[in-house]
Image 1 (cartoon, helix red, strand yellow):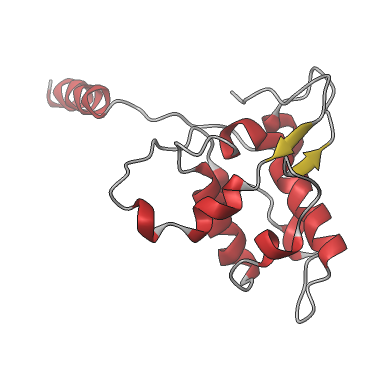
Image 2: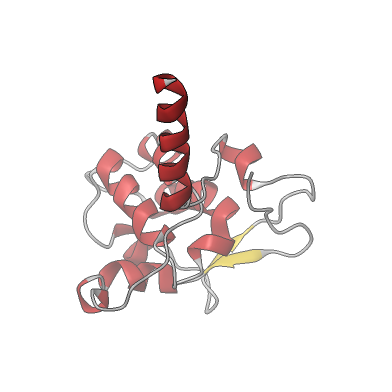
Amino acid sequence: MGFPASSSSPTFISDGIFESQASIGRNLLQAKKGCPVNFEFLNYTVITSRCKGPRYPAVQCCAAFKELACPYTDVLNDLTNECASIMFSYINLYGNYPPGLFANECHEGKEGLLCPALPPSTSADDVNGVHSTFNRSPLLMLTAGFVVLLFRLL
């Protein structure tokens, strides 16, 4: 189940997602919601194959970043969740990029990076083949575990 991407008008990746990455230390006491999208299994080769050092060309790096991030603007722009931080953690894990590379290189306007509109039937899952995950209730998981254990003992 995915989050539908914008269908008719262009959307933006807010510059705030870069700021949230830079101010992690200041936000330790401000609890954030989990992320409803599983960014672990995204295809990061979109970025790592085109954004390479030592020069990290801004045109290629920013285009690749937008291709990866634009389908997820709704959750990335919501600074009350951990989505942007999680996505940047994986980008840096797989690409070993210098701190602030995308924040310093990728600028398009006062609203942020312009994302092209996707067709109405396109969802974030369709674009990168990633399925969203939602936090499951720990009590529900515990109860299900006990029921399975009970049936195995009988």
